[in-house]
Length: 243
Image 1 (tube, rainbow, N blue to C red):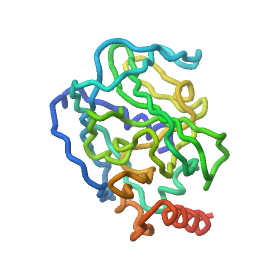
Image 2 (cartoon, rainbow, N blue to C red):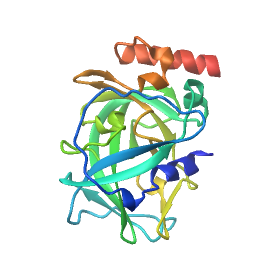
Image 3 (cartoon, rainbow, N blue to C red):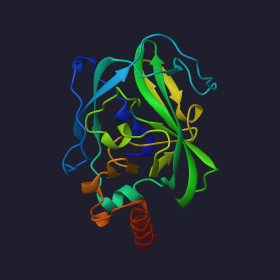
């Protein structure tokens, strides 16, 4: 399964699962199932009304993308995560890996002929590069919207992101073949962001007000890390060992 197909699984929403959930914050604890993907339930805060529309290229059709502000309407969505070992998180895809500070976060809504997917775009100012060749900033598509009223079950890493927060981000780089297809429409993901997180549980290490936040069970080699400097040293060790 390649990066493009994996991202489509993240957006495979079944409307039968609409419900409400109550917020709960905790550090991410991830246990991968070796035999099957895990079904996760997301409670997303979305808004009503219409926002500024993002321009799209001819590679996208049957879809509109608009900026959104956080709202209070709760929508539950479910998708599957592909179980990956610690080594596979570094080798399955040639992810861009950078340390930086989140400068802006904008919530967006993808609308495929009435089938809507709330997401967010974070702009990160790059301070250190572990792998890849980004510019001074990089845009990252997040698999959930972000805001004070937003809660995404089992995706605490992405949902905890805020403007001004520092982190290390492992993001897939979009090209012309990175497509999100739903309800007869096609979105070329590169139209709205340079990169994206494959899911909201793994792929980021955040320096939050409550301390270091990441999927600890997915990265056993980073056990005991107390800050981003130690996470950075762990990442460099992993990249050197797996190269």
